[in-house]
Length: 612
Image 1 (cartoon, rainbow, N blue to C red):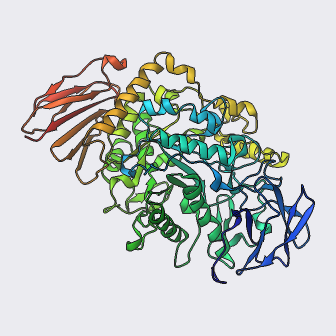
Image 2 (cartoon, rainbow, N blue to C red):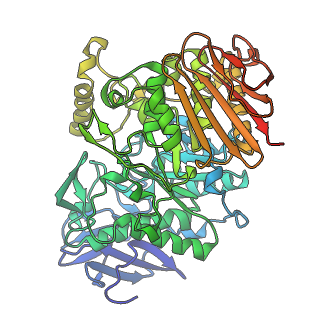
Image 3 (cartoon, helix red, strand yellow):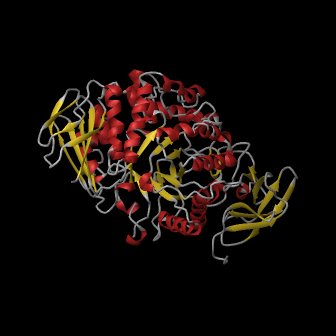
């Protein structure tokens, strides 16, 4: 390693020796304090901005602090474990010691992902990685092949969505820590399930955030919804860039994570010639070459800007895929008519039809909500670069009462919505519990230990929903009861109508995974049309010798629609209104070309046809 290269941050072990590096560019002295031995070891200046020490005095399992300029003791910004919480000492770990059994695992191609987003703390009664592991057989039977964990970086207390993490490298101790996450990933791979981890690169939480004491971790050049931006292009930014790039590599290399969902990348402020995401993608590609395993980067981005998902050779940032909130918004408005807030930008079924075609709804048109032209068309981006959903943690939890779709629409619409997702030429994502129509809310919750901060969160939530004053105050985010209300009710699976809805999801996912057209997220052979007056939409897709026709009725009354005139009749694959799914009536098993078919209210019919 040359003198100008940044060091790998934190503590690692080689042949029993600890290699310790610390980014603290403005410090005059740096030391390591071992509380159990009451021993202080000086670090020496290394690469620009770094301090380093190699010692046998620190061993795996030991607690330690960093001391800057002989003053206050602070946890390691690159700590791998915080067993005493965000204000306590760090704990040294050797991640290489885990006994992996997934040597034969080569991942799942991204285009085959069926994603299932879950929150570790509320997915099971245990609220741990071990609890998730106990449900893997269920997820496998459901048809899921990729679980997506909401953020697991160490946060204050034991209850949090995860976006208040302050130690990017440390796995939440109350979930099971690093060992528990490694064990879960290993178990998932044995079941043929990939693991996606949600990580936050755009901000740190407010409590236990000591990073700014080590150096210029934040910059006054930009602001974000969370305050000052992390420093990725200002003075001394090299160490910050290295910190987060190494964090991404750690999840892939040391935890065998298959993909990362990068939270709100539009809030990463970086105007350097080589954007942080580009540099990150190159380093990940190098790791792919070293290991022979695919690793994917999936961005959350609301800019409708294809440079985030365009490949590196086209000067893009190289993200493998991104979430598409606009598909959700268009689908939600079509299903419910709700048009408050950002939903005001969406007209309903016309925009849903556009999203089936273009992924983005706004591709350069004027956005009334933003009061400007917005977006660009993703002309050359394949379907597997877009993740779509009918609900997710944001779209539920950011409502005042955390109400799920199951509490907002009819039983028939509850079946139409996921079908509309699964027939799309994009990657489908479910949110935990939707498959049985979970009725428990998913509320916003925190467990800050700072009373002043907890009160600020409580009051901020009240202000956010002040326009709902007639409905009372939002649930207290700091109350443990709010967290417990958000736990899944697994017993519902055995009760009606939840049991039938679960079977419906299983059949729908099986059709998506097995049908030669539906299983390929191919945008190149998609045709779509809609009837505003009827609130109907048809979607035509083909691949090789197979054609698929999807007919959707979002209205509350039966609608007659014409069948496209082709040479062969259409055979029925799936009918959401069939009595086996507690629907009102079955539809014809075969459709003759040029005829009309009656769509039941709030239903979908899926037909296919082979070329002869």
